[in-house]
Length: 136
Image (cartoon, rainbow, N blue to C red; front, side):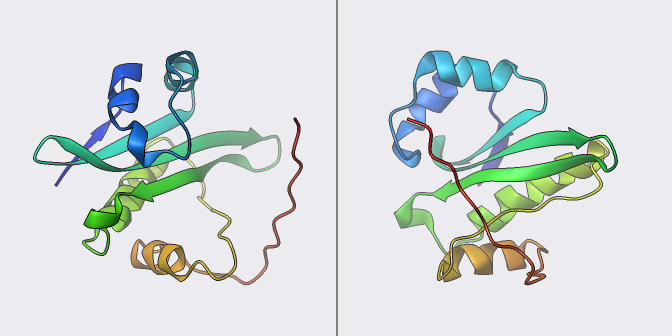
């Protein structure tokens, strides 16, 4: 397995099957060009098999933290440590960039995601409920 930081919209469109919806090149470029936005791809034999995206946010009284936004691994490649490696890579980048921490919301009952995040060093502090707003 090889992990690489995505740098072009073409890389993301080549990995489109890993995303929830088709990759729009203009959105992919915007994501990659926005400071504090990061995406790593995992490859097996040159084929993209997983990704993790993360977004840095800065708050006046806390500093900078990293939010893992989305993690996906192709079904045929799950349970091989790819997700864990991707999350660890994002965490290493967060440390390198001076983030004071990293956290992610996980859907109730998503035991696979919870196991992946725990395997990458994450801890469930039991204090989070996620509230959402849908616009459009």
